[in-house]
Length: 477
Image (cartoon, rainbow, N blue to C red; front, side, top):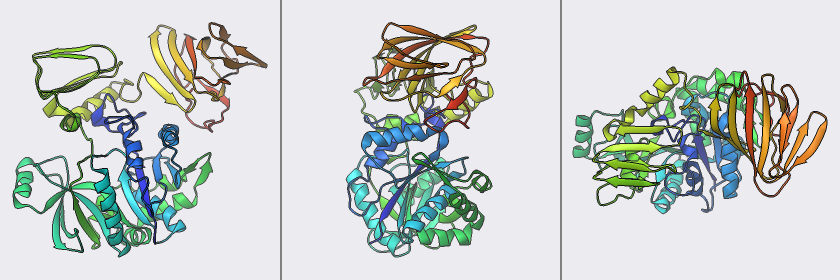
């Protein structure tokens, strides 16, 4: 029996869920419904059933260590973790997956899964996947349709054709995101499902269809896999080949052109978690219709989504709002305008701000750093270094650093010296001196770092050695 290979596509930035979702920490890496992130939920959803292989994860390079850490938390090994040097949409990612899986098992079944979806009926989804596998083995390309229950304008629709087997239909037509009147007409007519963006087919079938409908995407993606190389636990695609690949969604490149597409309508509590209003729809509401998390006091407040982050949020006499606090940014929006949050993110980018890109807490493979205060020629940060982890051996041209150990014991390399620095002790790092910070202990190491100098940007780092293979990358602490 051919195995099912979940292909977890984790390339998006989720800008409509700003300020929680940011380009360096997108929504799929954040928890919204449980202690697990959306990516972790996607992986766990298919853990267990026989015939399902370890996931094949495709992401960009920036997120690789965070994804690896989240998979490690679950005890999940991957078939491969592929790093895209640039974003080229889902058709290229699907072609990469087809090449990798096809080399392992030509009739292996790809299950293409966005990493940022939420499904409440997980058992129903697993049952549908196993049923869809039978259709895929027969040569069909299966798309999972979501039973439309309201005239949504944010989804594409699939019109069902004739029945094909048990619970599946030939695709009569793919319909782009409609306006509200057309969406109401679809719902009134019946036989239309939302396009979930989840697809299933044999690797050899997808390769054959891509050769017919988008040969350049297939050729460039295949060349990128052929020229790939291993970097620690990651597979890096060949950059020139992948960069030359056209950027197109798998929907328009293949699914809407093939004659092999079938749709399986499902009612599994699915959401693409595409906006704050979707989280309000899915959340547990109080008697006034509010979805609230964090330290919130709401008076005469109705139908509002409020997400706190430690400090008190108080509301009075408001309705139909979204209020989200992340510590370094607060979003207040009309609930009917949340699809436009991406325009707000674009404006932040155009203004040269950084809040669209990074959080105050920035995750690194060794732990995280969090900015506490920034002023003229100084910056204060909190560093947490995981047990056994270390920062790169590095130096700075424009800043000096002063480290104070708050918790744990630090091993510090400073020039040609090595020393241990314990709690309540400190050490000074002069400008231009090679240094490295390590945590040799069993508990997280907490450091208060005070930087001073004429330039404090993160790109003032010269690396000499790094256990995480980041020597040739844009510097990150």
